[in-house]
Every structure is written in C-alpha cells, then in structure tokens.
Image 1 (cartoon, one colour):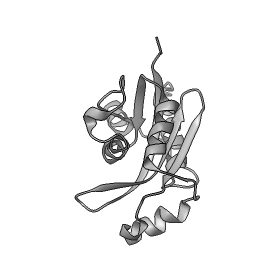
Image 2 (cartoon, one colour):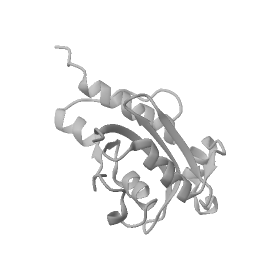
Image 3 (cartoon, one colour):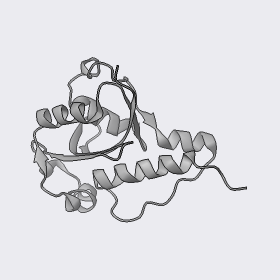
Image 4 (spheres, rainbow, N blue to C red):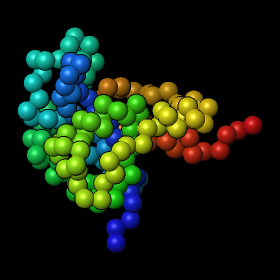
Length: 157
C-alpha cells in the first residue's frame, strides 16, 4: 500500500471572472523531487497586462500538453497525495481541470487542497517573505514548502 506524500504546488493562470486557464504549474514533493511545466495550449493573448508583466515574463518555454502534464503529475504525486498550496482556491481548480471534472480526479486523491494561508492565520503566525522570483510556479511552490516548514518549526518565546 502506497503511503501519503506531501506535495506543495503553485500555478500561474489567466482568469477573466468566468474561466481559469492554466499557464504553468510547479510542484515540490516532501522527498525533494520537483516538477515544472508550462501549458502548450495556453492562449497567452488572453492575459491581462499584470499577467504579461509578472507571469509571462518568467516563462521558460518548457511546454507540454495538458494531457502530458496530467500524466506527469499522476506519476509525480502518486496515489495518495496530501496537497498544499498558498491561497489555494484558484490553483486547486486549475490543477483539477487537468483531469476534467472534480469527480475525474485520479483514484486516491483528495477532493480538496490544504491551504497554507488558512493554517498560518489559524495559528496566528506570519510566513517568511519570499526571496527571489515571484509568480513563477516552481519558485512559488518551493516557497510554499519553505513556508510550511516554518509553521512546523517551534515558535521562539
């Protein structure tokens, strides 16, 4: 039986108030493995100025089709992931949509994502400032894991 693995992830996306279109996704596993991909089918012309300046500027050209990304992610996270993100709502929707409807998620996956911001608020803790590039999915996923680690560290009194 496969054990649960913690995954921290982030996405970049274009949203217009009705749809969320995945641009890129980054993931970090608790064992140190990393995954990053940009969506080949993404229509960058739909991006607002903010996304053009803050997200598209950081893209690397490491594109894969949505179907390839979905397969990669299943192989990367395994059958029983515990999935974490920061301000997770839209990221979770963008991830789930790779598989179609919510009920189409891979077997063994939760139908929810754990939100690091909510946990920090509940604990009354501040998260560390992110250093380096922001709004690059892998860099943000790395920071999310670092922030999670900071919440697990004892509080100095």
